[in-house]
Image 1: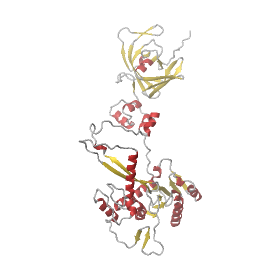
Image 2: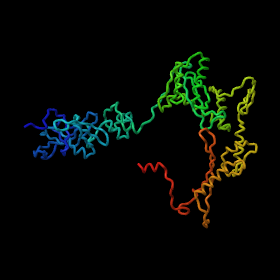
Image 3: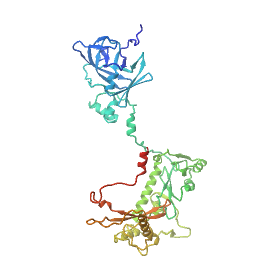
Image 4: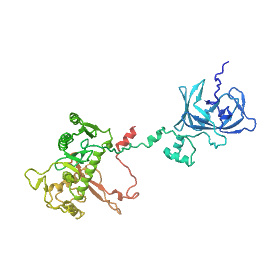
Length: 508
């Protein structure tokens, strides 16, 4: 008769047995901690035979994955032909066992520990017994998995450098670390943008040109310009700025820039770096190809690769906003601000230069440019008017009789509108009242005795179009509900309006 589970000569082989109630080992040398059994203890086999138990101890199994599993209370049975790992005990202590397609996979709390494979009707584990000197301190905890991955998870997925310092301080056991290991939990929980290092290049003028298009918010300049494009030389960091009414003008401005700088420096532009905006595709790329210019584009959603141009856009916009706020000028004066920035290393090509025949001054859309002027840099007439109007009576808006009608129409009132120059706000108030009455928002009732009425407030807002022009004037009547007291003025709170996100959540 042939034995189904044939005996092998390798004593280091371990097999998983889901029918065994204890771990069993037949080799005394594989135990790391051992004690003799007192008395005559027996082990009952599945074939009704009895074997003697000679001792009990701990065995450390080292898996091919690098993890170590400490089995406690392993029975020493010399009469056994195989060393068995109880699948029932592993399952009881939180391990997850999977048998599929002649393979065995062992894990715990989602962390992979080791595997095995089918052989001669059983599943053989890919482990070797780790022999440790009996005099050494061996951990006695049941089913310890001593590895860098386990301690990495125990310590809150700390970095491996901190774990090395803890090992040197004898705070955690010593174990080897796999430098190539990548924790999937850390990748998911600590995912950040990759750091972009600054690149230092040794270039000549016009070797590399950085360019980008930036918008001027929603308010165009007085000339109708909504964007500006910058061309920055990588070597000198000299910047050219051109104002654009639309993004399709970027091609024309690049041709002007290319013609000027190549003629002045007697060199050719070699590389042009930009993002993947629609203004830089064909025919822009075709012009670069015809002139032998290498057009380099950034990766999608990676503005850091065009950092020089992006930073220049931010610098220009911050300078413009700061000068407009400090001077009290309106947002449509950005064109004049760009002309002033010529003195700080930015050459503005925004137009408005002196016309032929004018000797010392020129007039450009209400702006007076004078060569022989003396300035009081601490005096801002527009800012002074704004402060004067804001310091007047707070209950009504005071309009200067000499103020232009267009300026009066654009003022957003912060208090009650009493000026005759604000018909658009009075019309918006009338429309709001008509809407409230049409929708039966409230009912007129007798005032309860002993109660105080709630106050109200009008909120005025100008709705703007995409091109920056005024769409309509909106007035809203708000009741100061925060003055109500629970239990006195109201008892229940509810919202009759449901957000669309809540509806979608219920439908899923």
